[in-house]
Length: 596
Image 1 (tube, rainbow, N blue to C red):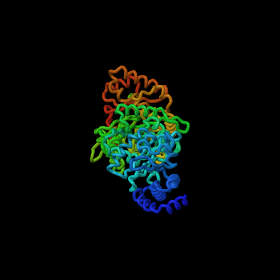
Image 2 (cartoon, rainbow, N blue to C red; image 1 turned 90 degrees about the vertical axis):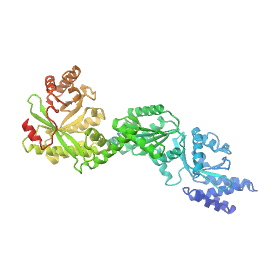
Image 3 (tube, rainbow, N blue to C red; image 1 turned 120 degrees about the horizontal axis):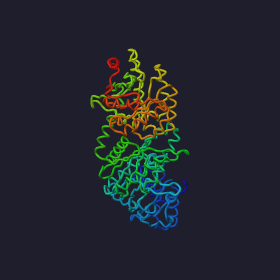
Image 4 (cartoon, rainbow, N blue to C red; image 1 turned 30 degrees about the vertical axis):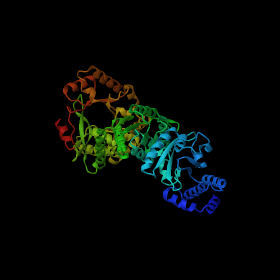
């Protein structure tokens, strides 16, 4: 290779000058490539001399020796030369020798019909920015969807231009995600920036977040997590149009940029089908793993005309989708942006709430319906800030779950509740049972059993007096893993309760599958139980099945004597609600119990 360059340089002195020009115009291209292209251009300039044949051979030989894929175009934009690296990289539909004198758009059409259209946008953008880099996307039979970084530069040699394809610098390596081979966030932003500068092409930007990636990663290991990301990438490629730019923008986040002029209904239908495919499960190391995802969609120019505006809009929509429920797609609107700002404020505030001592616990007593004696207390978390005042758990618990703060928050609640219970016990007023709510997210990390065991060991708390409550809806997710953890918890001696039973539409027979001690009937059935036959039938059935498995039944949300009488008639064991007693602090709990 060195001898080829030496021969050409010795024969053609102008090559060095051209190489210097190329080095200035192509700072991101390797020096060796720049020198070689300079030699090629000098050889091209000599094609009309007596050494035409020798020069032509030297041009092709030098081009083929380059480490990068290169094409040369004349002043009319016609292809004059292409090297072996390019023809091996791009699946041209005709023989390489027949490409000569092709127009640049025709060349790109050989890569993908859509690239001819996109190239017109490149031309218009390059009129404003001559040194603009871009990307092109195409299909390779062996590798699937691939993309190339395109660097096009004019020269001073009669209006000719050089196009170099591919990544030739450390910066270029950041254009694609090495794990999934999808585009990187850097490349997504670059492509989006170029298209936004046109402001003539309708765009759809889709952000997809994998909700249960962390759980899968923690449960099955990092290798399984990586495989899930790869399978998700394959699923996205199959589900989206061939001209879509698909990127992995963060650990478990993907983005899809559609430039085809789809209407919003078509885009949202396609995304809905994608979510259903993910929900049905992907093959991860021979396991079918259901994937929960949230999707946010933003359209240009309606939801933004710049890169930052579109990304912010799509991110806001995705954040709102997470808040609503899993496998949800949300299209951006201005209300979501305000909600996203508020959620961000809550997230930042939650991270500091424990240190600032803004969090507190209150306790609501439970009574034995027959004896009317206090037999339990449920810990309820409260958050009061100077900026927002009292914040409802319904607002900040979902934020804590989405951000992972729930694990720290949940452990604080457990530890504080145990300490408060022990303080109440000093007055001789300890109720029989301390109930604490657990989020389903606390089970996903696989540490909840260890955390509870350490808590019991450190505090010396009687495990039989601790009741851990999980919601009915949590039972339907990752049933095998959850069942094992619940079994392990009961082996420690703690009690388990199913909270809000009735709203998740679980079969009553499913209660037999879990080692539970209590079933808490949701307040929705208690509120009209005095007059609604349907609610009475449900509560009666829950009581019957609970009796058969040895579990107590607790009615929540009791607001009047009529409701209390009816749940007593139907066989409930305990009652909880404002009619029984309002929530109170640990310091006032003994006095209230004594008074009642």
